[in-house]
Length: 444
Image (cartoon, rainbow, N blue to C red; front, side, top):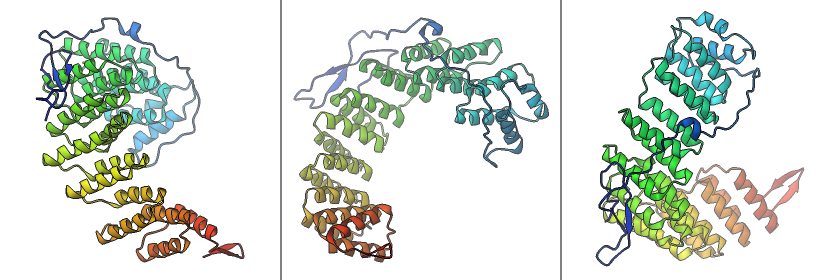
């Protein structure tokens, strides 16, 4: 087993070395002297390329869902929602003076964030800044920075972030992560990297969310693979263990860039670090190796997990089966099916549905029957999707009586038909001449 051999240094550029007879898998090595990543020193105002946002003032007749918040919070949200464009926020808040906590106000901001109402959020925030009884804390600042960032208003986000010092609100990892996310989600990963460096200079330690935000921004923005691995190494050097989100972000970058060897190494490191993959992990692996025409590599990685005592979850096999089925590769799909059975991973209804559909589309009706029988013998209960596939398969194949039998079988097994079931049934029976009309109704 090989893994990402990341040296714990502030910044470095790992080098991918080719495979050899002694080391069958690609490995990462490092130059003797690490070079630091280029850290931007430009001001955020120069880096920022904020979208121009037109001020839209209206009177949306939107009320908050009853019982969602406390009575006072609901009342305030409804009052602010119905406030005219030039209405007084101060007058609106008079009745709530010294009655609402900052936690209550955070609910108000979250509600407006959900609606995308940045104008009211900003007006409320500016009012709070002028007050003593509800002066915003770092949490409120982070919320408004996030709201403006989602709307692409980076100049306003940066302005509010910079105001924190003047208003004696200390900046911690919370507000730094909020502003980093604002720039990152708008494609400005250079600014995100600069802010990460800036917070370290101010002796504010990033957390897992901060690094995941920066890595995601860089991955989506086209930052070099070496740069992504450098960020990955920095976080580990600082004692922050990468989580599922970190690894999936790196695998997503591999998928987008067609980096097969790199994806393999990320997955191995993930497995050896004890981070359990999820369906997204395997989807990225299948995407990556599917593009490269090397889906068998995913089977190998699953086999390695099995050999190491880490039995993959059923969804990992199903994702791979789906990929083979999409390509019409019956032999390979059945190989994965037998592999999962041998590993002690019991197929579910979804597994059988994929294979039944694959055999059916290739006109192999005997195999469909055999597999469906195997499914029942193994006590795997068919669901509506399974029956819908069988009804469609046999309907297309001209086995109309079999379709009717399957429909009755559904009723006996207490599987509730859905619209797709009836559509398949009507199509099959209509094609086979098993339907007749009486008084506008269809009878089978």
